[in-house]
Length: 146
Image 1 (spheres, rainbow, N blue to C red):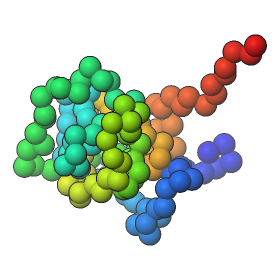
Image 2 (spheres, one colour; image 1 turned 30 degrees about the horizontal axis):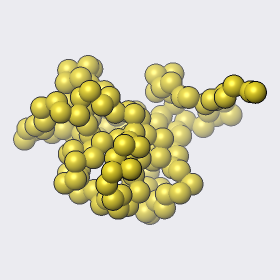
Image 3 (cartoon, helix red, strand yellow; image 1 turned 180 degrees about the vertical axis):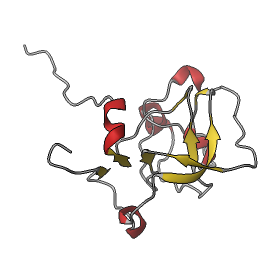
Image 4 (cartoon, rainbow, N blue to C red; image 1 turned 120 degrees about the vertical axis):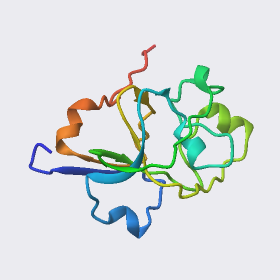
């Protein structure tokens, strides 16, 4: 971005993006809107398994499911996160307890409004330049030296 890029598109080195991942996307998306819902286990909308993403607040695993409703709308989405089939970023507790091959269903786009939160999984995402200051990246973890 410092050198003039306007969009960041990223995926993990262990993911294999489909051709659709590289297609140009519009920042306005037709989506269901979840606003003022607190922590949202977004995986519940796309999987039949009871899974949750890495970084999800565990005390909210038993929260009541928030229904999407029937209406969608065009929403400005400067940060767009995708899902990775087969080996998604799930919580470590899930990894230890259950098998991992997961195939997500195509439910439709879900946009988060004010007061709704999900962990940003840096495995498959797109963001436009003006959204970068709203993201906090953990870029360095130091371990104590003996």
